[in-house]
Image: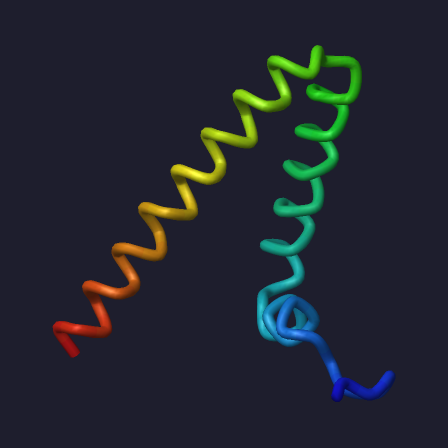
Length: 69
């Protein structure tokens, strides 16, 4: 069970990442939110599918890397 003082995985990653990198990630996230805020459901669903494919590729690469290690 997570307690309030236990950092989440995202918090740990953010804490371990350089401040300028976090600012750029925040800037890009905000830009993407503004870009898709008034988009149609079709456009948003298409983007979600694209992101799902990216995650699948990333997970495959990580699995291959750990297998090689």
